[in-house]
Length: 131
Image 1 (spheres, rainbow, N blue to C red):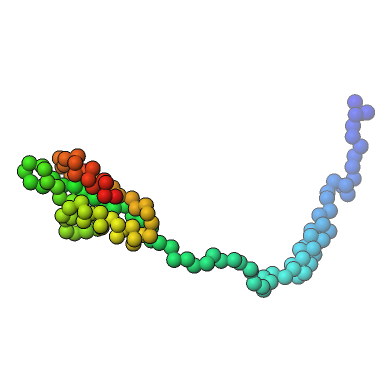
Image 2: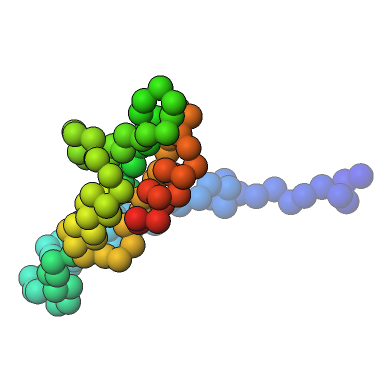
């Protein structure tokens, strides 16, 4: 059993000598801190900005509401979302929609037609044909 025994080490080998390594680490840290420059270099960044263009305003949908007029439901009252007074006939509606196209400078202005109550299909189709 004595053959398997490890040889005894001297205490000199058992402890690590960390002091010189810590000293070198701190010296390197101080060296790099003093050698580095912590300021931004001045200069201009070249950039190409887009030209300012006069874009048309975003196209908002026009809401056209058809309400029945009269007791028999043969008449119709046409209202637009941005107009306080009712529209008298479909020809006036066509003129208002043409002006809206000129304002938005676009041939495609979304129009939403809805009926508020029992409106005859004839009036809905006439309003649709004006757009």
